[in-house]
Image (cartoon, rainbow over all chains, first blue to last red):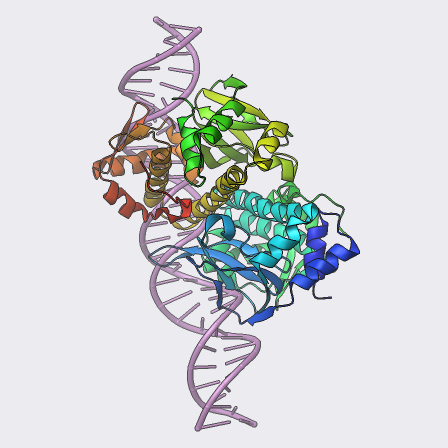
Length: 240
Length: 240
DNA sequence: CGACGCATTGATTGGATTCAACTAAGGTGG
DNA sequence: CCACCTTAGTTGAATCCAATCAATGCGTCG
């Protein structure tokens, strides 16, 4: 059901009782729809809600004054957009909806109230933000030192694993609603070059990509091509 | 004095009373020396102390199996190495001493004890880790989308500002103990190319670099060359 | 002194960008 | 219902920024 990704994600680190799960779900009663390509949050914003992706994909991004864009993270169902705002004060980057998104708006006060009485849940939220940070380090390695081919393979390995964490992978196949330009912006390449590298990935029978889905034909081969090691995602529990 | 950087850094977000400052300093009584190029922490470690740089420079890094290295952050006096370990469980990257480093080893229990009774200090620590995350996003933009010349300029702008935050800049001049290879590893370039770009930066009279010091001759010019905007460092107080 | 680390310079190569054209798919409105 | 338009993906050719390979200078330290 629609909150399964969020609950599954938190359950990776926290012991969630049935009651806890219901508590989390009850926080998400104010849900709003954001169309694709619309900003969910803009640089400089001081939101007073915490935003959680219930359904759809979004991307954190930063831009250069001359116009080029770097995507600094993808947000999938169960991900929090702005847990850092109460401490940092304002968004230092934007978040844009990649697909149409269902977003839960949780009043900060309500969240504080729940977490102040539930250490496990609080820790799960910190875990989520620290894993985001760890992912950023890995992305920096990816963009800074991996060749373009491995770079794209690595991104796919990560998304594969993250989608698995929230139960959205079946037979190594999962929704991947990204355009080649978005992949380019995430990997520091151009769309044209991404296109070419995708073709070599297809040519080597590692992946099948099209109509919004990615099938990993050869998971071990893809990991090898990427030099992928998932430790940086800090998954503490066996995946379903 | 030797703890000034640490206190200055925390004071950027927290109201530190004289007593608070003394409390923080008293945490640092177990200080150890790490020679240059030695690992302070290695990937996979599960340290039971929190490590704080009292003096010297260090670098967070990740490596590819084939050998190339990406520096994912520089640590200067006042910086914490491993605040995330209690939540994540283990280091997902290494930290190496760039210069000889004086490191304070704070027992985790002792830190917990102090922060549990001092919300301001706790928030300051969270601020520090979230700013690290923000810096990572900016670095990703830097490596992914800025041209090599601007990339290096941007790094220097950031280090300039961060050194200012902890009171180590005089007349736009501050210690910069990095080799060109280390700058290369931080910017995703090669040492040879860094060398050439440094020369153009020098040629344009933006910087003077040598014998372990960087002088920013033209701060505004350097910021412009870099497309630098310091908001991502989330400095909430006027600098001294 | 010799060895080593670091900085510098030149010549060459190559991976990725740029520019441009073209196809395919999908949605919209007359 | 089909002409039109937009968006995404694909392909080719030319160009360029940064990497690579290689050699040299220079200071420091054992």
